[in-house]
Length: 522
Image: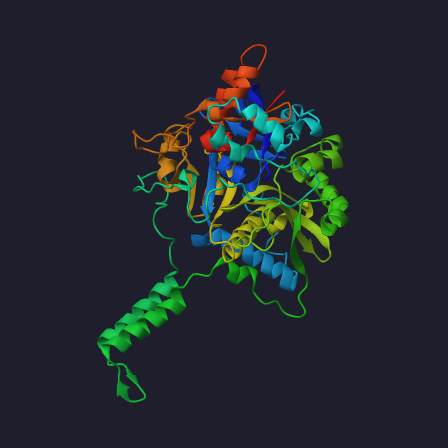
């Protein structure tokens, strides 16, 4: 059985915000994750956490200058908007004909998944210096000796029975307390309510239909009403007329899916060849290892051109730490996707060279977008938007093998920062309530965010955080290479009490994760 091992770093206050440029406005909590199961990380992002390399952080929403709300797209119900179709058609024209004459300068207003690149610099200064030996639990017999002092010995014994952690292994076993697939926990709860009128277009209504399709439908309806339709000389019955009408509707009004644009057949003489490769983030993987230098060089080119980094800010070490180091343990399950769960690079190869890389985590219920970097020379292709659409299609593809995998997580939605509102254009989507951790339709949240940058989206005043910490003594601790409950650790600890820090940690990660993950104590 594998265990997540984390070091809680506490709150970080008064540092620069990469969104509003406030020099001291940002407030977040963070922890260094030495290892983490995909289920633990799924539960954490469903409580507002997010990772940057091995550093996992959570904005303190009611105090930070720019509240960051976790956003997810309901991938199975996603419908392309007019602007999305333009991007997809633009890519098709470029690949099939090499046509760029009409797309130069026609770039989407937001062409990249911009995240906290600037803000992450302070987090890496907090990098852990704990040795691997200290993070490796002792054998079962030693751990059980300590647990004998705990009143809940019998209840705890199953969780203490851990094997030694194998740092280089990609194989992981599911903990017995992992939620059963198909039985969503409170973290996947969603509350539906009628949207309130807000500014701009009514986002609750379906997208507008083309006038040409409406005219065709009206013409057919008029024909059926005013004339007796015949087929091979025989009058059509009323039921046949309805079927004819429905058939016509399905042909003329059926919207194209994102797959209709992505997986279209190309001519044999296509000007370019685009290939998307999914590569596990592991130096043991031959594809990842062979493409590392090219991928790192592309990252540096992107960071310097788009984010104005210096060469020293985006070297291979920084690239590895930011986008290659992941705490997630790779996991393969019979009912999971063929590629397994864990961290991956989705590489976009154009005519034999990498032009973009989408960094993603494949988790039990979602594909989580971590970062995107691309060749600025191809910015006219709106690669940020295109890659997001590809990732949504990829989520739907994974769902066919893993039915619980239904969502596409896009990181944080920041309404107070106009340039970050583009994530709300992928519909239907939900925002996470920062107080009760239930999902709310975005169209219900936007009117609230227009009035206040920090909002409790769940309007049920009696609703509480169902996953809140209820018993601090049950928090799992790794101390002197021995797993124990916090109640046992507290009796053995020497020196000043650390209960306030442990309470803060447990309240942010919730009861379930606090009992499953190991909180390292020196």
